[in-house]
Image (tube, rainbow, N blue to C red; front, side, top):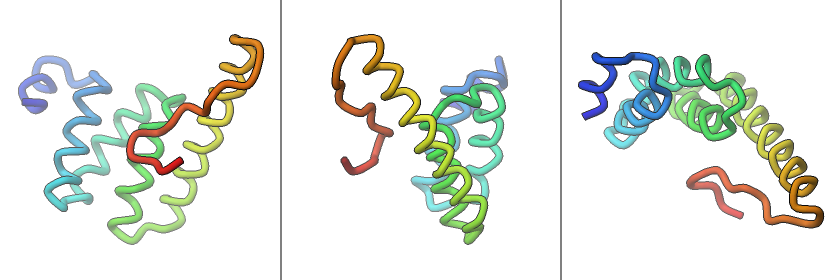
Length: 102
């Protein structure tokens, strides 16, 4: 499904991420990496994208790159939480990256 969408518009972050996730589910992380990388280029402030790319890097043994991406995901998540707390005026629950344990 994502392949058809990407042929029409190869710059849709959700389709890029979906394709990457599909490759991850098929235990093909090396093929997922370029899709997550392109998604990251299009939405550099997405904690979810950095986290997914980090997970793919871990699966292919690129620990330094994985650490960098996962750290960036954590930084972006903390930044989003701080902004949310300011917006709602008080303590708000942390936004969760899909699949992350609280």
